[in-house]
Image (tube, rainbow, N blue to C red; front, side, top):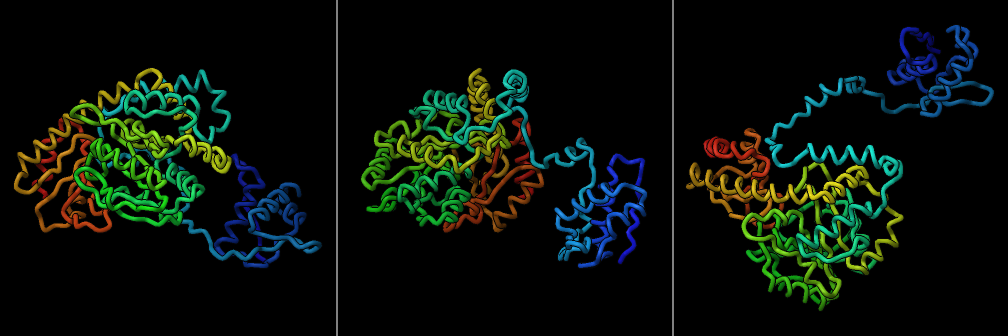
Length: 459
């Protein structure tokens, strides 16, 4: 038996029983006490350390609960068999918060002009001071009623989407919303999904992981190829008709009616992702397809990440009444993972008209950024870089005439703080080795011209 002689320190705030616990735990993890080795009796160790038996019993009980030791009736306590010891080199240290936050400063460029955090802070302060009792209860699995009301009003005015708050489901990001959607579609007997090619891959992964049969459908200048969609079987199609990612394609109204007709004839569902279609810089934003639907065939998906700030993962879906009824029948299986504080803050932010004001500001700012970006590419790299122009969104595709890989080009951009992603990450078939997506929304307007000059030189 190892001699257990913990050194008890009266100058620290940690209770004696936890100091004993710490000593024995570390001795076990470092192999100084072996499996099935007997520990001193409660009375013996208490006498040895000149402390109460109750204190030793508390330490032994905690070690037993955590599985470091076990007891045998009438025999005492013994060391458990521990397969993996703790690597003390990776045990976290106490690090002052301000130092930890300073180490998190992003290397990517960012533009604080894109969002009014001062007004957001005032809205959050009002929620915390005037409505704090609401925060002591869990959020509704469907999302806070106040925010669902504001969303229903906003998307009607801005996107032409028609719904009641009861049709809206709020979640922490598009991926969570999509996970809930797969459960609803499964209950409807739909196990097949058509997706845009190229398109948003995380959504594909969710459907694939949930066992859906998947059909990639090519995207052209007017959106998805309707002639290649499944026929004679109930299915769903995931589309972004107002600003297809990553191509920026816009589906004209005639083709939207064709897609609605396809869904009606095939007893199918259209999943309309409208993630940042408010950010249209030339002309009015194109109305949502959901507003054209008269047969309950469209699920409308929206998000606030692109129009506020990226870390606010609040997304929502507008379900047709029949699908909303299915959700309510299964919503007890879910808990709301979206911050209730942020939901209520956003509701107040929208109710005061601040969200709408920020959208107008972003349209003007991002239009200037897009023009500055295209102008800079023309000035410094007209023989090398061909932008695929777009009238909306927060990014642009560029085709680069080079033998270097898209991954290499993106790494060079990252050295300048510019977020660039290979288009090939979003396609499973097409050759897009020298096509990359540039997120210009992150770059301050006055830095676009000199940064693009440096980028073209690096490329």
